[in-house]
Length: 162
Image 1 (cartoon, rainbow, N blue to C red):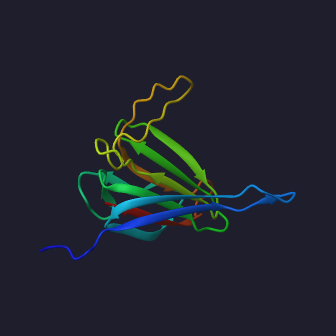
Image 2 (image 1 turned 90 degrees about the vertical axis):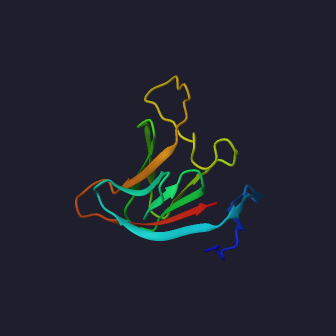
Image 3 (image 1 turned 90 degrees about the horizontal axis):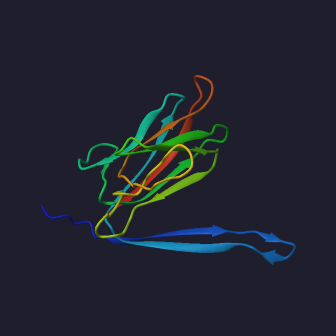
């Protein structure tokens, strides 16, 4: 069966708006991603137990995406109280974590290079100074709410693929 989905260009626009003492310090940046033909958008509830929210590899399954086709990931903390820790892990078991406060978003972009397209060779992490960069493929993103048992937060996940 031939697909009836027509690929389209995705446009991501980030706008900052601020004026201090009558001087505009705002700005707008736009990214376009051609040939997007798959969008996954969902809301998940995370708890204080770390759990995989997105996975990447060569197999496509529920919550798992083809690592060579992912071009854009946005994770937004929809909670009005709790922060969330996002942990990014690559194929070398390197991890880095970021704190996503209430109402904030984190964007992770795929690579457009034809040799290393998508999430191939896009992430590295090391403890301490003197990072000798050895990029690996992003394999998953986990989330958890730091702190007391019973705390939860809703996350909106958006993934755009070629």
